[in-house]
Image 1: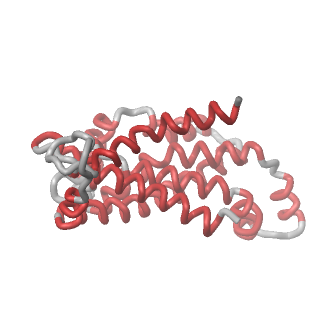
Image 2 (image 1 turned 180 degrees about the horizontal axis):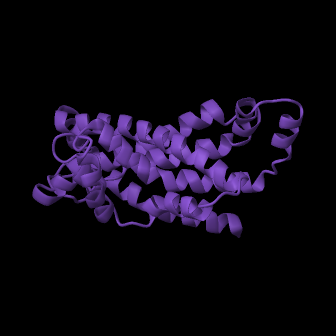
Length: 250
């Protein structure tokens, strides 16, 4: 019974992706699923349009870089909160979770002056930092939860045997955190890949990611190319999960 409920829940989650894939094969110029003949017309249109393919490539490398930023910021912060007691500990934990509770439009608007002062507004670096901020809460939560389930005895034993802080981190803590690091990186990657609202404020029209291009398409010229973009994004996320499992899952 539990397995059946799980499969039903998975089917419900994947139903929108399946519908988007169905619509993407429509031969018509409207967001309607094909009822008779299927066509690859919009896949060809997507591949031939540099605006769409450029946004896809840009979104992929921004997502990868943002996942790295989220890991560099989130994992050490989670370790400090989980393993140490210090003044401002609760404030640091709340600050790490705050980007996940702020509406994207408010967050994007708030980042504008912060990125404008150092001249990062509209730059790839500013976009990566903004997306890394969006991935920080999930990386922090996953790493902290994993550290909470891992007793610090092994780290204490390593220090008792003469290992320095960096040796303990590299040979004990990081191997223990490997599943959490992988899960957090994948979640941050997918979050960045599908983020459009913050990108509208931070990147604008100069360096749009795929969700920004999709948003403009929905506003002015709705075609099944939007469904193609949805399928491509879903395939990219699945490829990242599969590739990570093949490399790190064993």
